[in-house]
Image 1 (cartoon, one colour):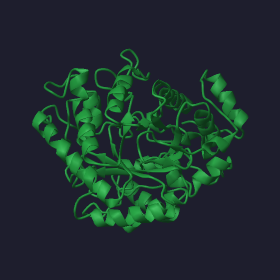
Image 2 (cartoon, rainbow, N blue to C red; image 1 turned 90 degrees about the vertical axis):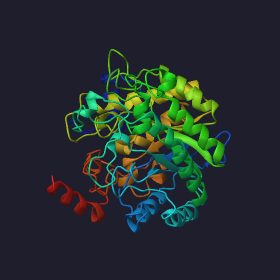
Image 3 (cartoon, helix red, strand yellow; image 1 turned 90 degrees about the horizontal axis):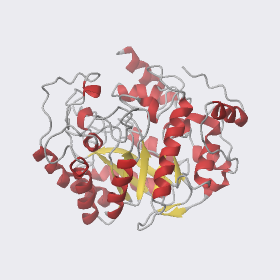
Length: 434
């Protein structure tokens, strides 16, 4: 595994140069304090730092936020970020990836409203986005695999033990999801969210459909068919709610053609932006002006979207290569659509040096805002120190992969190292069950 040996910013620069990478670094972190408005929406970032959606798997049985959920989000609020991208919230019970995944429904709505009201009060009105999801092949509503697959993908079928005769979801089932997303979006608006995210990343159902090259029927094969449900959901939700409609979009799966979206046909490790650019143009015309960019899937190749020092396997590339892929991939999209607010991914790996990468990307116009996920789990109050360029090494995420291990174990997820009082016992219990 990679040994994080960086003691100074010059050490980071030396590795970037040795690897032949292009990564922007700037010591002027004041640019991260810059606020901005999202075009066409009632969304204002008070600074250029966002918290990514990080699932805690700590809901009540009915999908409502628990006291532990509340603790987590109020802890996030201490960071004073410009935007809070709320974690994946299922649109139905069968679409949950865990029996403690959050699920917004009539019974849980009041609890969501109390939490969102409290978040708005503590953050002085910082926007909160609700990520609406269908887990697809990762559905486990009763903590037993209940995959809902768009097509048979041999790359992902094998590690998740999906047999060749497992039924592929029908076109009629996919048709039925549009009103489910609309219903969930309306509830999100009612409980006080400032926007909704039509999640299409990390190989959950809408993301998997984007790569359904081998599927037959209305939702597979051609670009128009593979993107049909995603576009239909966005259009329907946009017509029914008055809050912002954005998306967390996986633009590169890293799985290989014909099973990965945004993958170079000859080299699955390379990002081919052609279809992502086309898709973003299409959803932009539907009114999407806020996009959170990501890559890979944490269930299969976490090194792609969460470059790490230690983890479940030896990654096939230097972590900085993955960082550069995400930073420069997002920059291609931002350059092509300067009037869309893009939130970038890939900064946490650099720990106390992450402010300089975030400042370089934001300051040079490569991204609108820098997003942080694992760092938010680990570092209480991180955005204040990030903007000040004063990250404390003993509070930073170690990119040790333990939060991903908890997620893979389908149990309550957080940082067992930096938030050890709560999550270290959970981690030990989960590992003892393996």
